[in-house]
Amino acid sequence: MGNKLIITAALCGVGTSKAQTPHVPVTPDEIAADSVNVVKAGASIIHIHVRDDEGVNTMDTERFVLVVDKVRAALAAEGLDAVLNLTTSGSKFSYEQRMAHLGVILPEMCSFDPGTMNWANSYVFLNEPKFLEELGMKTQEHGVKPELEIFDAGMIGNVNYYIAKGFLKTPCHIQFVLGVPGGMPGNAESLAYLLPKIPAGSTWSITGIGKSHLPCVLLGLAEGADGLRVGLEDNIFLSKGVLATNAQLVERAASLAALAGREIATAAEAREILGIPAAHM
Image 1 (cartoon, rainbow, N blue to C red):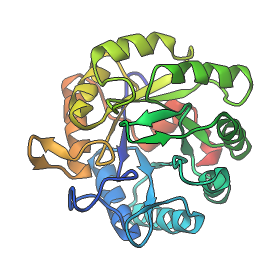
Image 2: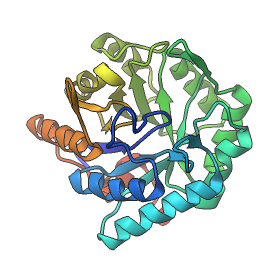
Image 3: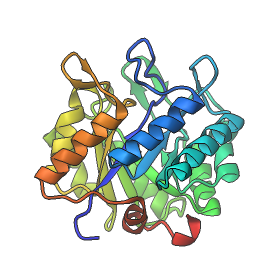
Image 4: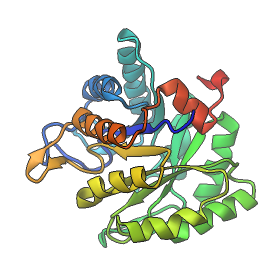
């Protein structure tokens, strides 16, 4: 694939609310419509969290099925293609709730958060060893590519541990999520420390939270990232005081990539780069 760049759109996350920005998609229909918008703008992966009828984060399998069915139908109606990456994050939910949707939906990708941290010094982002062992085996059982989200330095060591123990398989896909208080800052120093430590042969992507968002996009391009993640899960502004849409954030990433001489990968090319088998499409 040469130097083609994968753009991931993280549409809503756990906590971005309508009170913060009217552009965040929270209902199933909004998520489906925004999925079309971001793919048209250049995204080849869509990272999906789901909300209940009150707009609160949920790991309910039926809700995931409803949302994913609507996303797939909306993309198909427009003749579009995307890799769907479903979250498994959710400290307040049981292991079973966090993994149940994988065996039902059989997504091509899911998140895998290889460690626990004090998120923004406000709550525990809990990912216990037993859960991670079970999740690693579930991804292998169902043929799902884990996206290994790295928020802090020790998580790289955990990834190598789970590889050695057989819970993760190589080659890995690493998603750096920098700038969360309690994790590593979204700056060049953090990336310079982390990059040499990822497993050999890994692909990697980067995002920054809040004010770290654009600097991390630029860092990723400067360091030859395989992917960039953008979206209202991570940052709600296009510039200071100017609220963004998900599609605008994707368009900006694609424009910056073009300036850096990077072509944008299609969904089919993203699968090839990440080693997602064609038979799993």
